[in-house]
Length: 337
Image (cartoon, rainbow, N blue to C red; front, top):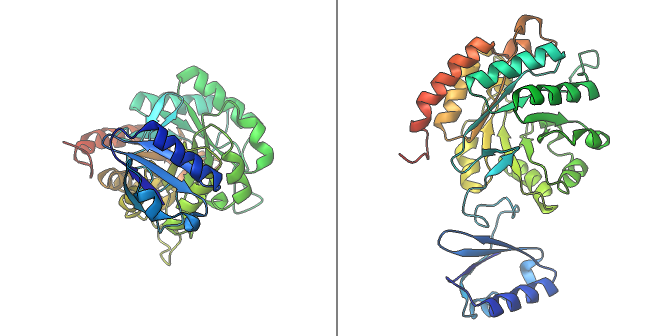
């Protein structure tokens, strides 16, 4: 349920309304917009008397929200949320590119790639320390050493770092990580999401392989219900009957999610396609659709990468893509002229 207040509401009446709702066990989330103030009511609102609230002088309108996600809902929060990752802002017109290797392999590799992507315009560094792999015999990442090397690359370049968490037991290792990524396989790991909700650290939440957009938003709701509203959604392709690409990029997810939610939306064309030749055109499609950013895999020697080499761009090709992105962004959907 949302309560839309009139301009300059009387503070005494507002405090009385808030206390009354709180006594009923209803959480009140206040959003102050450019033109109006909205109270988002979260909890069992079936016992709330709409007519009684509408009769208050400070109330303009009361509406019930049908969607199961509340905190992530744009009806609760009409203005775009801007997520700050180590001083780099995502959302609300702030477009960012997260780039780096699928997996951290060595200090030389991660620092070289970090310097290259920064020179091309990337503003955040990605790199896997813990790697979820389909085969137990595949490279699983450098684990704690991988995080240490990411921190070293951050020290050398100044780029905030983004890396994936696999399990709650690893959480203590992420103090120096600027943004924690929840991968597609963990999108519905609800105990992990609840714990991340207690942090005050940005979370990059990837869509599950076969998840609907509502399921993605409900996973974001788990994080936000714990008090952490710094969530960025990521479309990374879904599993369909098509086998030519690694996954099928759902480009329509970008405008749909931005219509339903105030959270920033970025796109991962690397995992969506699985082929480096397809990354630039799908990345540009995401930009045109109005995405708030991209996360792209870049490796200085893709042919010998320990993980996902076929979908990784070389630094040179990444630099070319960044020039194309800069040329296209003024014409992106939803961007003001």
